[in-house]
Image (cartoon, rainbow, N blue to C red; front, side):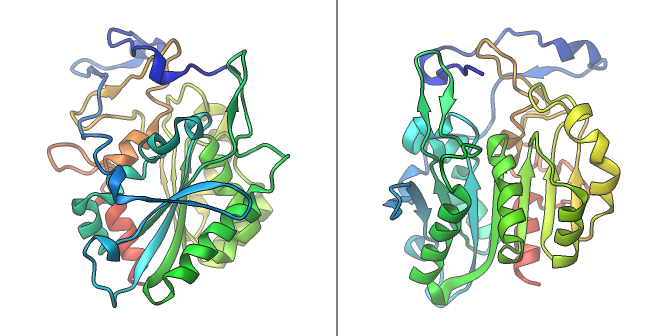
Length: 303
């Protein structure tokens, strides 16, 4: 499917999405995230894997954390086309705000890894080389990158997490299928793909902690097709928190709309994740996550 070049067109901030007919009195559409973006790129250093994959790393010790401390490692997997934006992928994949002093403090410090798939945009707008491309052994490459970061910072490495949205959510599940015991926590977000029951049972028994996030009005990974048939199974898993809200919101409490010729505000759950699943007024999106994603990461890291 062709995807817009988001950096070359303007967002429609007057859009009235099809899902608006389901809004209740008093609810409103929000077209902007309320956190500042593109301000923490300097916290990341760029590296290249042996296979030629670019990846970015935020080292908490380099930015003031205790050099003798142990810190979780969070690998963030971007959605389709985001790798074509280069360093801006740090923002698009959800990692940028987690490099901020505020989020780092809330997590007790954390390493952040942002790998870029070998994506290319064809003349017709279609993207090739994304995470599901069978021409690349992305599973092995990604584990290799995580291994390298952990080896290079061995004395500071705590528990390992992987998270991603849309195509990155798909790849998050694939990494769990291939390397389930390697990770301590995972956040698959807005993924069209869910593993089979046998795999889910294995993950449930492995001890990995899951936070599965998917909006019920997702425009691209339709909830009734992707999640609803598996919801009972997902809800039954051990150490699993299913976050399936009616609406995906921005920090101002408005229902999120993002329209660049196609509406995807409800698919872009990653923006709310980047807002730590919190509202601007300090209220959490879910009472099971009183301190948001940063609190979830910290709780698991301390177990």
